[in-house]
Amino acid sequence: MEKIILVVDDDMTSLKLAKNILDQEYRVAAVNSGATVFRYLEKNTPDLILLDLNMPEMDGFEVMEKLKEDPAYAAIPVVFLTANQDPASEASCLESGAIDFVGKPFVPLVLKTRVKRILELMEYRGRLEQMVEQQSATITARTERITGIQNAIIVGMANLIESRDKSTGRHVKNTQAYVRMIADALYEKGLFKGVLTEEYKNNMIKAAPLHDVGKIKVPDSILMKPGKLTQEEFERVKTHVTEGAKIIDEILGDVEEPEYISVARDIAEYHHEKWNGTGYPEGLVGEDIPLCARVMAIADVFDALYEDRVYKRGIRPLSLTLQYIEDGKGNHFDPEITDVFLSLKHELCEYLGEKEN
Image 1 (cartoon, helix red, strand yellow):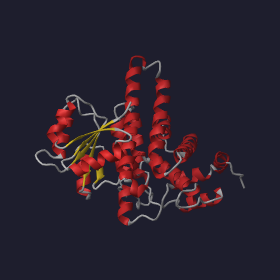
Image 2: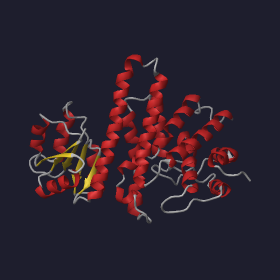
Image 3: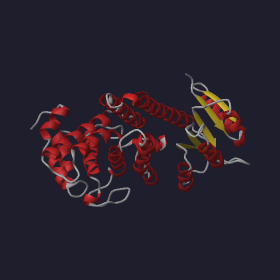
Image 4: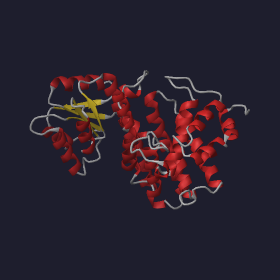
């Protein structure tokens, strides 16, 4: 079924431009004021609203507030259109309930890509919610089947996010495999007994694919940049950890167990923290960093070092990559977890198809 996009902007030039960019793939409706939004919604339900922030009489924030107050409209995803791209304006947009924002004047590729990704993400969410509703009557008997479906959707969501920076999805597969290896080894050795229960271990493995889900909030122009990022661009990339935690709460919070959500949120928000306190977003030190995030940090960095990227060649052979990980012991990485990971060389060789030497 053809998706419907409602564009709301008091500037006719912007309306026409948005329509020209999107109408080859979607059915685009256009209105020029906040008041007309609700007249349109009386007879129509768009899949996405692109809402101008600065409009006379009723601005974008006021429209957003009315949408959220009405259960009939509250679930419609909203993307703000704004020429104000300073951090305060961006924060206000997201805090008001918008799923994203797009800068004006429009960059056609960015607008098309952002709309496509958001619609795909919402479709994943809708499918997940629909499946949970359909199975609720027989949830006990079908728990294993539903868990499998949820896991597949989680991996699908993660691959969708990774594809924005031209990844093939291998990073999601690899990092989950490494987290599984580390978590199983820690559990078998009886380490971190106060935290690492079997449930915690399984939640960690299941949540690993979502570690970079917050990248959907990073502009394509930065995420796809082939060269070195500026300091300002890097600061923007760093926001993906806190945004990832919010997305996990918003999309999975009502359909997953609280224990799993807690682990998934910790992985997303803290996997760039460093053992010595020089990481982000909070500069946590040592065991103040959640265990699941300390495990994820090694898996994530190892894969980033070993695999080829559009901007660099992978570090090979495996022994050289492991040396980089060892060099980070006690600085970047938890020393105890590092030792366990380094002891997994045989398993890593088997997984990566390398000969052990």
